Length: 209
Picture 1 (cartoon, rainbow, N blue to C red):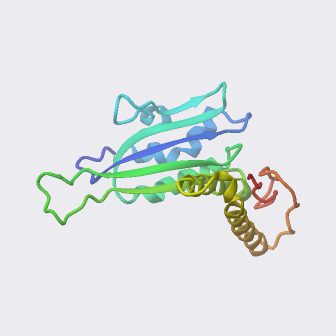
Picture 2: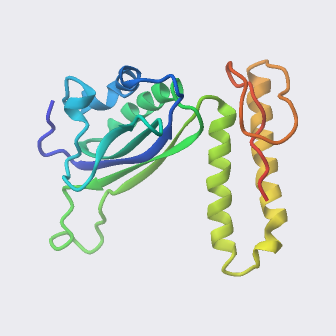
């Protein structure tokens, strides 16, 4: 249903690479939590954003890429909805990808609000991928990018090799813990973020220096 006077404008942004065998019907099924939340009877009925200058939710069939730049009115309950949609996207994604979700407080008036009052704006990052290894890979890559960006203000990139190696060790430990918790055999050693099919199989996140 349409949410009048919703406390937030929620913006979803991300590009998700999809498997070559995935068609529109599978995308619609994966994103059902989103288009139902927006009050649509199908993906096509809710794919347009609240803002005309945003492309909304689109499927590039040639590139096999799901593109999302989509705003919808909503509340805190959207967090559960986006998590459900991410679970669906895991089933059709060909690689790991980040999805940014921004909550903008529609009830906050900067001019009329008391000085000590702040908007309830919030932000969350979601990750999707065909395997846990693929998801951890994109998490690792984004973290390295952020850390290097901050530290390059003070150090040359060549001096940050040990920092990147430490991040890799942390993610390898997390992956080992995940594998052990699922009682699976240890993954193959070596580079590459690809993965074997199954629950948590595949290699560790690759090390990029």
